[in-house]
Image (cartoon, rainbow, N blue to C red; front, side, top):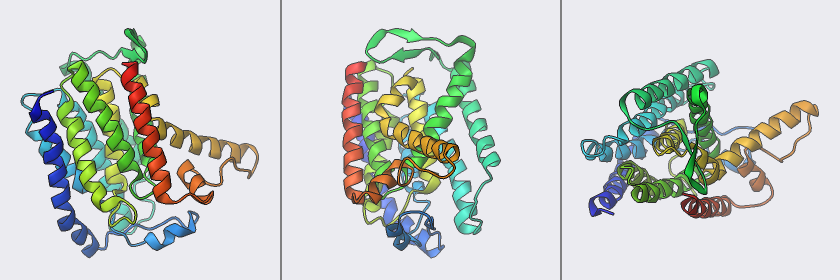
Length: 318
């Protein structure tokens, strides 16, 4: 592995760490604060007013670092686009909610339209300007792939949008989404190096930027990433997985995202079917563990450890 690829982690980390002290007071001055759900855990109410939209910090680090590598590693272009594209959607949503004081933010139809447009551009670039196949590698069967033919593109839309929203659901505790996605980015960094996929710079940039951001985002958080950050991270995970023909691996290495989405789906479905009964004390599932008495730091530690172990299994599955 070339040393200059490891440097991408260091550059991004430094940018993120240095940007924090400048950006956090700025967000606080603009009164860009988080409003907590009234139906959420009561312990979260004291977090109201904590600056949000902090995803700008690590997104800036990812973009700046990636620009140093784009010329020699053109495969990172669609991944960076999907990351920034979803970050922009999240930024607009956050801006409407916390600056314009419109609690709903973007309407669901507007948010979905934005996600479809960004995903569509990514799919077009993937098919038209890269040699990456939409056939998907199967974990533990490295010599076999699944090719859905005419359903490859619809499946791509499903994977990207599901991953993005799964990452968004995971962003509910101090440092949770950042810690989990750092582990996921580390997996892709190692996997890309072993497969010579040429995606190490963006994976390293994401890992480094998130480690820097976590200096301010771990409990008790001084800043939240907001949808600006969580949607962007989902875009990164989906984008790099597709560039490596590994979308199926998201179910494994992104097991926390998967569980978070399933917990919400099951909770809502069961609630409607039973007219008011619940499976979990609260969804997404990290809130269930909170209400069971787990501390935020314990949940983050356990979920991150699970992700690291899943990543190790993922490396064995290559």
